[in-house]
Length: 349
Ligand code: ASP
Image (tube, rainbow, N blue to C red; front, side):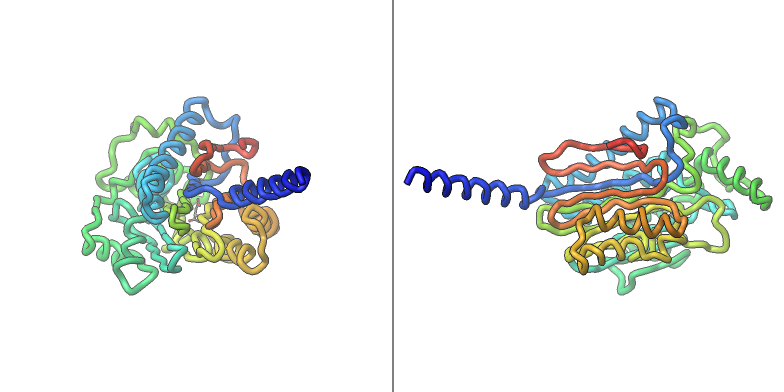
């Protein structure tokens, strides 16, 4: 009898602990600040510290929303607005320049609960493109707005408008000049209203190559997931080029039936592989784990195509993943009851 009781107790204990393990965190958030050529030897200790601190701050900004019971969408918008204002990142202020010397901003957001989505491209006056993408999703009958029309819609919604010179940073300007010289293309005049040639934080930022988009995926306590992405695109882009970041299914995707993904990298490859949606399809239809699905697309398909970049991902059960085939990706994750993890280089945790 005693043996039987012990057996029953053991079975119950195993059942309880496995349910607890399956329950997953109440909320979770994963953030990226761009992938590219980011090697330990290239970053000064100050740069390394500045990026890690920024990633921690941004993640905390999103987690603060989730901790209070806020929605994944609110957390994503809060965290991305933060990064759009931080000149360390290629989004909002600090965005890279197009060949014509303008900052042309792209962004998108998707709600995994309803599959509602909003996206904007080629925005030049709206301070927070992520908030504009959300306004498109929530207050227009459309999914994707571009150019002056998108800025006009932002204005009609009362979103903050700024002079285009607001987005100017010296280091991105220098990257543009370098790139145009290499390509033997004409160098446009410094944009009107651009500040003088010395900017305090310019020296801190590392030039990670042509990109450095930002993105956030989150799970809230209601069990809903969402994804958002914001970028200046690629340095010296031409002819109204738009990358994957505002393309739903390529740079951003979210469905409660599978996962939420935000990507960074050379957008032309991410569009052709519909990276974000493909990862979620592998989870949804093939039953793959989130990390395995992300690796399948990034390490195998993207790499085979010689594309470069990475993704962050989250699932409604609290699985979190990142995968990139570049030497680094600014990244961080935090979940209810779990410690903050911040990484930059490939061999970081
Ligand atoms: N994916 C972005 C684009 O192609 C750039 C980046 O992630 O750095 O516009």
